[in-house]
Image (tube, rainbow over all chains, first blue to last red; front, side, top):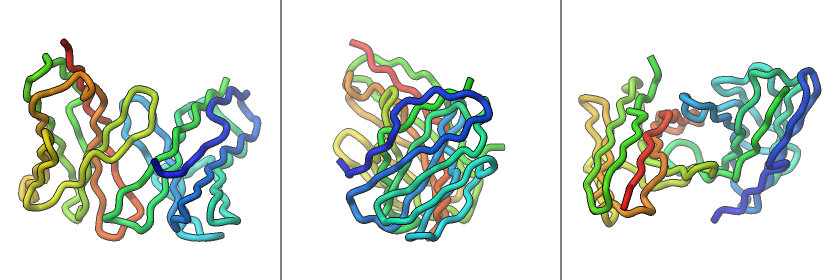
Length: 113
Length: 110
């Protein structure tokens, strides 16, 4: 299995509080991604990174920010959590874009009350 | 209309059955195609890539029809361990933006 960890694995937080999720990889892959998964929807891309300090928005980026200060770490921040951000968040990595598969972390289950 | 559409199922089949899933995609620029498998409350994992000529991996066969913009997955001789949700994934060439279907749930029963 690819070396990807996510922390925390579960979190319950209140509306309006900031939340940071961490993704850590030991594969030295260049590309890292944050997705959310909700019932009835496929995984949807929030943000992605193509290198240290290089990030860009995905399909559902509103309300989220990211940072990547080291190759191995990619952080996702919810500046002010809302109930609509209750979801399962997956981090993924890949060696290149497009044709290569993405490897996923175990996920973080976030509940915003 | 969603970019990638799958029949959500559930498909309930007996062990040993053959089952097929279809997936349609709307972006004609899509170049890469995959089937992922996701077990309950786990992360998705690559099952197989889908090539233009079709490809087979043991009991699993994937087909691509570019003209009709659909992908299929055939599972022969179903096992209990095949019970999972199967995600169809498409990607434009050299794109970061992989598009996932919502998944088709399969339950294989004894």
